[in-house]
Amino acid sequence: MPAGRLTYRVEDGLLILTAVGSPTFLQRRATFEEVRTDPAVAERAPLLLDTRALTDIMTSTEGQQRLSELVTGLGSKMGHACAVLSSGWNPLATHFFQVTAGEHGVRVGLFDDEANARRWLSATGH
Image (cartoon, rainbow, N blue to C red; front, side, top):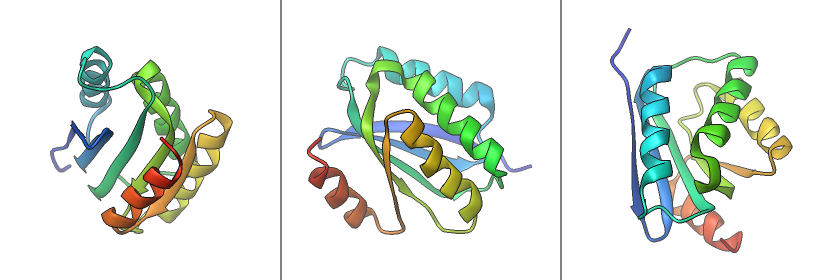
């Protein structure tokens, strides 16, 4: 299994999470904790989630679980808009991630181009 990591940075008011390989639950949890305690990350920051280098193949249930984990893990840092950059090779999990997000009050847009994702986040008013 390929090594994985989940990193974050703040850029232009956006919280940008980048998943590479196959990040473990512990790696994801540690990154979420860093985000929650980082004063540079605004409360309710709009999120750009870059999954283009993610190698996990998830079922719809796993996609839903990851979204719940993300919302819970980020706590008050989780904004109401999330742009997901995806390579499109795991469309079922990405679709269910989007559907489940609505149940958490998060609007999700799916993109394969970062510039379009950023424009969408700007247009959401966040």
